[in-house]
Image (cartoon, rainbow, N blue to C red; front, side, top):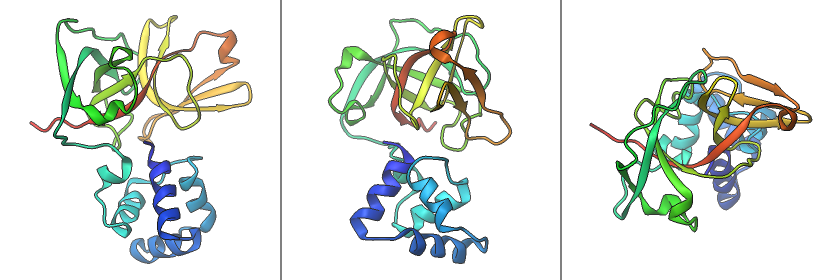
Length: 210
């Protein structure tokens, strides 16, 4: 589940208004947060900076990972094919590992998706930091479509490369957005007529602590 989905769900369930949560973050951070900024975070139009996301998590007595819906530890596990290393950075060749290798992930990450339609991929790079970190394991549902706010694995055949980014379509253009401000979005115009392909949508993540 996306960060924005969780924020919206928590606010609705506890009857919290945009103004109330914005005022709390303003008080805690010492930086003005407007109701409009909170609304945009809530509905996935953009993402809060990491320090503001931490205050939102604190307000609801959650860890940041829990607010993001990205569980670290689970009891019931399932094994998925580990198909390679995917770049959280510029498009890069999918560094395929031995298809006989598998990775254990929490079974609830699949929800009701068939196991045969899902694979796991290990993150390299830092364009999605702090929400995705090096060596995080992504659970990817193989599909060729996405909606705004999805974290996708994208493929560009002209570069023979893959990348993991946040998907955002606006009219006839698509942005592949990083979370790390040191990276710039990748823009495609008329993506259905060009070369951007969606390999799959990330439906969960596990952080493997070593």
